[in-house]
Image: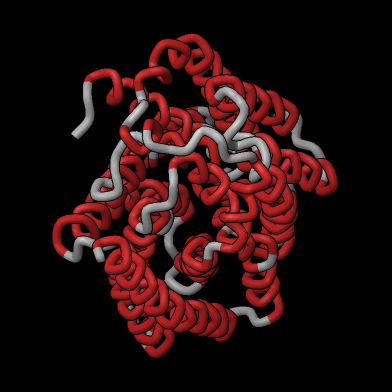
Length: 420
């Protein structure tokens, strides 16, 4: 599907996407150590994630104006190095307000400066018929890198006795990895980034001003529908974080396995969900938007089942199977939820702005969902709190069914109009 030079660039993009979020997503492998050594409650961890997401959302709006302008290797490399430096400060074990400050800055370094540019770079590697596979295999590659890096950090934590020293060692490993990758991308991507010039770029009108492009993006109903679909997926995705305390509290999952489960839940599933979602979207349904519609229905049904299951009487293996199966469905959605932008035929000159706009709205749930879910669990301890959280996730999934259904219809009408 890709030339050798494009594979080089694609590999760099995977490396970037698979390392930069390890520190902001520290809770994936170290949720319990964060509670113990940072002295945080569920709600406070949720607050840190929400503060990060507030800054991220504002940053995505600002990135609409520069994501199509700045050289990609500069923004990617700078964001990785800056993230690593923040991790070095985090290893000093700052207080609660220091943690909020660091997670706020992660919103700038990881999301505002990096994510829309990264998505645009992936999208421009192929034409409109390859978007599902491109984003699917991108998520798979990220999952592989995520898993290797996260398990390496967890191994350091375990080797140092699972103590404060081990926790600090894991943070330092994440930090140094991000800095090294940033340096590599700065030097290697210089020659690689000139080779990703598909026909989509060649045919893009060069005379469009940035204001005209922004106006077109803001008026494009398809972009808004894609953004709202992402919003619903991400609202459900935020709940996956709390499967970790769910298994620990309800199923008494041993502490030694909690970190491993978190890595599998957040990273390992990408390796499955990425290619499965991408290939089904492109090869079977031949439409990422139709795939989102179908999987929203499946996720709503699965959440309903999770609510009514007698978890207190089930084995821990059944609990892990149920939660991981649901997580796999969500990760297939995450693999392709930006693909409808390429499917809808938006011009290459507007792709960065469209990605930034979709990210601005689509990732907004993280501003409140992490905090909301965490505080619900603190206020309603035990199974009742988790049932409320699962119910809210199901509501977002049902909203996604409606929105993605409208998106499917609109893309079909637009494609028919272009043919005629």
